[in-house]
Image (cartoon, rainbow, N blue to C red):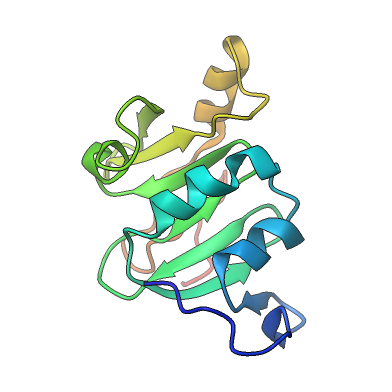
Length: 147
């Protein structure tokens, strides 16, 4: 489960590549995720045994302690769930979508988002395959930084 902060510092480190956050609440604030989605995301991520929460340029990276794909929290959706059940156990009426060809993954659209109508499909098309070695999302050209 997510460990609470032990001091007033919002991050554990400020590495040039990415910051590691002490907890999800701080990460959501720092990355300016709409506050209407905070409780939705906290409930969703609370079911995952989290090893580390870090910042990437476009999302919050949630690394699992147990084997499985990492979770990426974007402004309007969260991706990287190994099954639809991971989402529906917490939010049974949430808007969820499957993606990936070799490894099926799931993403959930946040209650407060700008992904409505045709824009939801455009977001789904931007989600790329997940690397089978490091479980991160591949670049648009299909490459991964772990090679």
